[in-house]
Length: 120
Image (cartoon, one colour):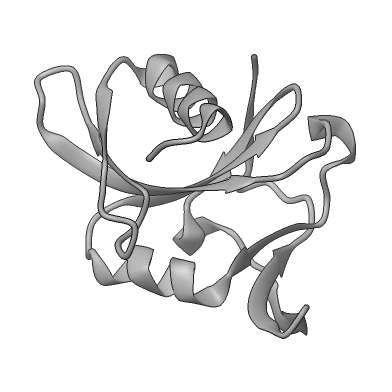
């Protein structure tokens, strides 16, 4: 089942590049991303982040989700859904810190060049 916020985030991302997406099993990463000729080009994980883009940092994601993305061996992207847009980045192009937050091992990211923004 895809939430409205997840749908808005993935749709905003895919519409930026002109492609499509497919929701995956709950135990897998969130989405497959296809180009306009229906070729698989990436996998994506969507994180709901209830803040505006301007004051969204630091961003966080469970380390297990990053590991699943990187295990796919093709391009991967993390998309944070904010109240007024999305922030996205490729895990290989962003640098963060690993720490325990609320008993989960999380990757935490500060603002950096590897992030892109799209307002919705």
